[in-house]
Image (tube, rainbow, N blue to C red; front, top):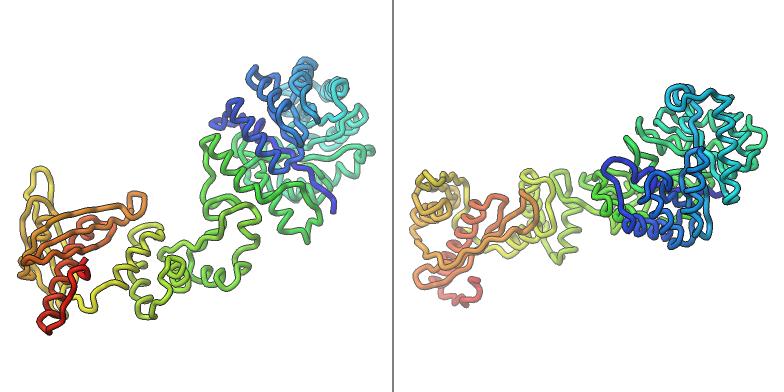
Length: 518
């Protein structure tokens, strides 16, 4: 297979975007990981732009082995000299020089005519060749340039010694079919194009950077300039991970390869996110939190039968921990059953599964995602519940405040009967417990009360554990809910039911050890 070279500009184009700046040590850490990832070229910075950038390029050139280290330089002699000095320690170095070739840039930014631009481009490449045999030339804003003029510039810089010619879509203006035609035209129009590698550098202003890069590869480009997580100026650059995995996944179509160790992709993405403090959106392709997550019941069933039904690549191929079945309101019984088995609840009946499933659905309507600990609490409550529940919570309403008298109205179910009462207390929980005492006629003395968040977030499930004394018998009750008051009431009712169940068994002459009430 032919090879596509991966030119990573995370540390230059990516880092110069607002909010993505890195210090020298951070750049060095990322550069080392990029080498481990297997990129062919690391564009380490723009040496002439600042003393800090000069130093970071120099440190990377001294330290990082394997990839070619590149420095960006304007088509200005002094820029090239500074860049060459910074790159001097590198075992493989590349000077990357550029000048704009579009009419709008030449007229308003450079204030130069086309002839002057062509001459400056040639001079820059010749100057760079004094320091290294590896010189890349970029025609800034190439996609808005006159195509025949662009071809003349490319021919001239190759004759001057450029080994790579880059065709940037600097402002993300191109459409894939159009960009493919431009690259194909250049490949066939420039007579000495076979003397250089054709590269592309696409921006994402229209969300087409990756698509344009892949279209260019189809037309014959053999270097792609890209960044980790697609970071970069404005809407960013082509995302390296998406380009590489598109090539990897569709080998049948592209029939090319890269040097990237794909199992390092996720790790590299996480590192760049951590260093910059800017994290990718959950639905980001390849490295997003949801890239290998499934919530819909139909999808979960398919993935459980065969992951290929809904996953076109293996998560481990990009270093992702694993596929994730998210339990939510769209999930099905198959995913829940598998999750319960993973959590240790293997031998459950269909009736138990249905009860747990209904409770998970109710909980999923109250919070965005149901976590493993949520499921464990529900499963434990259902599987370890009493054979008979004398009282069940039907309704609760409380009022409280620093200037209000705490009150609670509680309605319980006993078989087909609904029982309701109200009470006041020192707080909403105390008032609720007193209302329950009035309804059941079984007053208890609260000995201890504990609450903990089972999961994280504002919608976390809270688990309440109480110890209650009824007529000298101590009973432990537990309850859970996203609502603390409801969890507290469920815990107290659990203790009441345990005590009443014990009394019922003892009336039948059955002894119940005290530990069974804990």
